[in-house]
Amino acid sequence: MHQATPQPLVRPDSFFARLRDSCADDWRAYTEHAFVQQLAAGTLPEASFRHYLIQDYLFLIHFARAYGLAIYKADNLVDMRAAAATVNALLDVEMRLHVEYCAGWGIAETDIQAAPEAGATMAYTRYVLERGLAGDSLDLMVALAPCVVGYGEIGATLAADPTTRLADNPYASWIEMYAGEDYRTVAIAAVAQLDRLAAERLTPAREDALRTTFCQATRLEAAFWEMGLTIAS
Image (cartoon, rainbow, N blue to C red; front, top):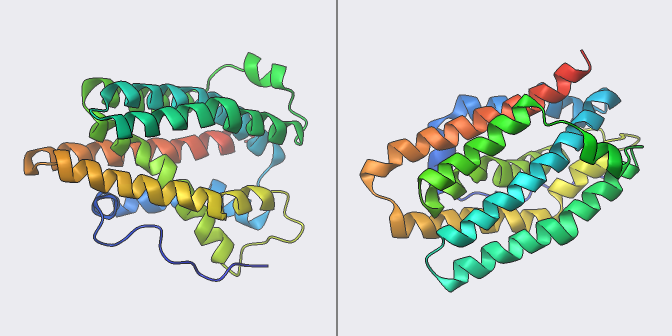
């Protein structure tokens, strides 16, 4: 059953909304990518999804590293503890769940660990880490935002769209996961954190650079989807 249209994840007056609106075409190319459309239709080649799942696991490793960097970049205990909790959740919960999900697709943990990183995986993860190393916690969180919030927006949009096929769709569980309340809470918290950091650190001189970071990260997310399609072509 399709969900009723939920309240938007992103308030129109939030800093995230300003960033997203600054590269609206790139954002649509990411959130409405053919990979996403084929997930919704249940027509995505299984080879594409398996490749995506493996690369997403490798991505999670660097995601945890990025939040480790967020601990270092934070300047108060509240933000340090929040970043540390995310690292623990990624390493102790999310990666285990991801391995279990992959097993349901016939992908063994040994195969995941032995897989080489795709160029698209390296490009986005290293870009996030570079922005965090070169800048502060706001730079880092802006670079992560297209992933953290974008997946929530994609999941909610697909779940509410009456044309999305959920019955007998092998990818329905993926859609439901990112449309679910647990992930919605994560995405909303990320938007709120960006607002807090922007209130503390944003200046007019920084906004253009942060928009550049956000737009580049959005394009790299679209390239991650494209990687999945290319493997089956």
